[in-house]
Structure formats: C-alpha cells, structure tokens
Length: 185
Length: 126
Image (cartoon, rainbow over all chains, first blue to last red; front, side, top):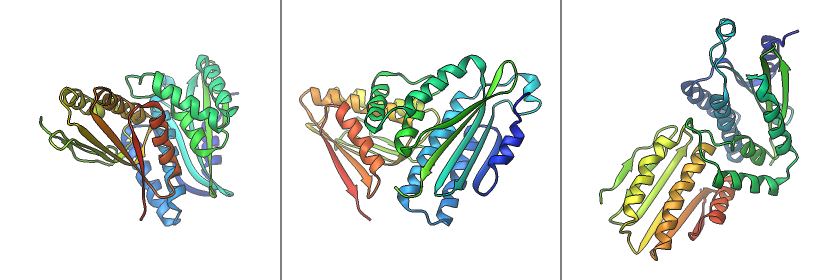
C-alpha cells in the first residue's frame, strides 16, 4: 500500500502550528516562510537565543529540501508539484518542531539513512570535528549545497534527527525529517 | 584600488571592502540558497588586494545569521586573508557575536582553529 502523503500532512498540521506548507519548494517560498516564522516568533515574544536557533535550523532545513528535492515524473507531478515538499513548523510540548518531507528515489535511501544514523551516534565534540572537516575539505556543489546542513542542525539543536522513510511506489520513498529545538537552552 | 561596496538584502550581507584604509567589513545576514555567486567578487577583490596589501588589514565580520552554503565561502574569504598574513603583512579578524549567541561565537572559534590569522571575538552587548 502506498504512503498517504496528505494524511501525513494533516496529522502534522494540527495543534500549535506557526507555519504549514505543501507544494513547490522555490527560493521565493523559502524567503516567504522565513519572514512569516520570524514574525510569528515575535508574537510569542520568544527569547533572542531560541529565536535565532529556530531561524538557523529552519534555514538549513528548507535549503536542504531545496537542494535535494527530486523533480518528479509527470504522473506524480499531476498529483503533487514538480518540486514537491512539505514543511510544518509547530510547538509540541516544550519544543519547537520543524518537520520536512520530500520524495526520494529508492536507491538514495540507504546513503541518507546511514548518514543520519552516523550523525545521531555522535556527541557534541565529534559533530564539531565532522563539521570542521567537511567545511575544510569538501567543495560546494554547483547548486551551492555543501553537505553540512544535517551536521549543522544536529550541532545547533543538540537533539537526535528523527526520521522515517515510507514506501510510496516501486521507485520512490517519502522521507520525513523531524527536528526538535528545546525551549530551554 | 577601487573599494567594493554592496548593499545588504534579506538574504545577503552588506559588504564594504576599502583598500585605501585596509578595512574589510561583512555585516548582516548571509543565507542565500547558492552563495558562490555572491562571494565570487569578494574573493576576486581580495585576490587583487593581496598583491599589495596595507601593513595592517582589519576585518570586521558581524553576521546575524549565516547558512552552511555561506560558511564555505566565508572560509574562502578567510583563506585569502591567510595568504596576506603569510606575506608578512598583518591581518586581524574581528568576529562579532550578539550577547547569548553561543552558536555564533562557536562558529567564529571553528574558523579560528582552521585559519592561521589572529581572531578577536567581540561580544555585542545591547
């Protein structure tokens, strides 16, 4: 049975939601989302420390989506959008949660899963060393991605990257990533 | 040589590179999706400046936010400054961070550990 993306989106889009979006992930969309979330956090009179952390992590999450999103084939584009992604920013218990979702080709699943598991197994100092190593040794892709986004998110939040891969069809999985930022730092 | 001056936007910082004064400033937000394009003229300017730099070059970096795409380009800028320092001219990088912004302080310390140029961490107290 194929994964129900809309049902999953509705499930995320409940409770204390600052921003929810599903559709084409473009540079303009990223600018708009950042503006909305920034002003919403002002309404909550969030401390500047937390506000900055959420903003930073949101930038990386959105740009990760932007850089890695796969252009969908016509039969899926008819249902979704060409560069389809999901974003929900909400407050859950005593944390901010940034959820992102996108389709990923089956053959890329293992590499991504291994990368996240490796990051999750690392402590603060190891993440710092990994960040500095990639910063100093890996070149930017043509699109400007640097392979640093997830490491940076893990470092800044100090929390595990929670994820699932749900089978959509024979070619695609749906990748969901939940990033948590604690209110108290 | 001609100064380089770029106005800031919601996603890119303001830039003032003054070769006469030996003062280089990057301020604001640096969060473009692709930072290569933005930083290219900065690195090229420094390439030219490094041929005949002042005895002392002062660098002021005061960023509110920067993304990981920018972090590599900022490293490229710093590597150009490192070549000036190696050529027996002094460079100092003033890294500004807002009070309580430990992430920004830590980011400065990351660069300090990679680049052989003296850094001065300066806390901005409101």
